[in-house]
Length: 425
Image (cartoon, rainbow, N blue to C red; front, side, top):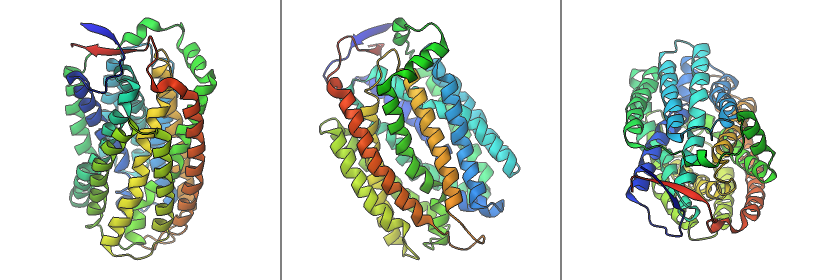
């Protein structure tokens, strides 16, 4: 039985809400891992396939572009169906796409498989965010976002080191097959344990999918949220794909040491993200975001200008930089998800995720054009330029989130009539 319960001011979580967080977190873990593993395997792929930096940038951006297009195409339908069914449909497609990546025999088929994976995987985050806004009150969402962002940390602590070990010893194909097997198991968990989320269907006003899409995009405050999210992606997406190649060829980290570098960053995420999420529910979200952004800007400039550096120093500086990067996401997304009304949440999250992915795809492609590697084993050139671009984008991010906070206004207090789905309680 589905009960419609008004959002209340209590910060406590029900047992079912905790179960939802767990399901969405493990789902997010595989999606993030599938995307993130392209970066640490970048040096392996570039050497094994003899790829240039621009070609590798295209391989990364292929996922992002297809994910963005898929999100726009499905945005009009996102509020027309039970969110559980949507999540399960796209997650199964994502699983199949990841299997295809593991079977790809060459660069061109790998890019094609990444496009298929992106078509399905790029929508999953948006659906998850819509489920979060349906089930959790705003004063709970900072904490929830913090736990969901732990998927990023867990993928680095467990996923990426294991994936790199598999790729190093048994080939990069098997790293994707391993992810796909995990995803298939999680799809079964979603089917068995997640209950329908469909109260938003009772308050739909737009008849057609295209009309709903247009009405969502036409709202000025929504467009400001879309732009804010897109700008959040650009700096990171430029740097991330070439992080492992920079560490190996510029910082002189060995391939055996690389998993340790990612593991330390992941442990940092597991500690930092929940703490920042809790603080975001207790302290001004814009203030936390601004402090984290300034810290990230300082560390990005230092890190991207490094030469050959001892492993312990690299680990420390990377940890400090990633702390700033990760501390921005929970407060930013908690504010941005407060913009849409319950009848627009699915469409808003889909468009929001799509523009984020498209912006990230453009950034990865441009990053591949800026960064140059003259020979297969030579240091990357102009990587520090990406750090300076990241600083400029971070300043813009602070300004844009300030505008979002102004639009949210009193949304920190749940609005009358806002509903959440509490099932089986």
